[in-house]
Image (cartoon, rainbow, N blue to C red):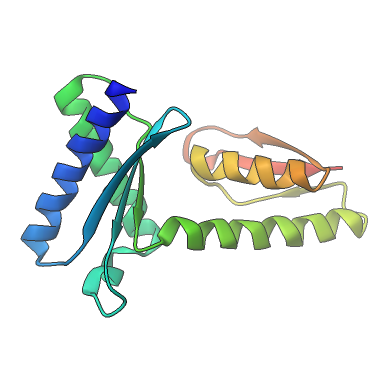
Length: 151
């Protein structure tokens, strides 16, 4: 737990410096659960923080924060970064994606391949698929790794 808290602190410092450099407003919260450090950046609804909350931008910032943690600790980090509720929004998108895939399976499709996504997103998809009583597996390598859903 101490290691995760340290990861969160390092990542939060990195993100705070980035916010200062870019003159963006945001409050940073740190949490540790499920074997991961979670760093959330939030602000008031009229903030310019939304400029950083696009999924690709959050993914890039998360990787930079992970590198900052690895540089300081020497250990690989599974840190999760959320900017302005971007993770919750992405979870909603994934739930819709799984719902459409489940409808295709119920309509007779033998399997449905989802697009490539991060390991964290695939984990969320596996949980959503299991809740629907279906089966899912990750296939492919590297950036092409994706989830396949079957009955």
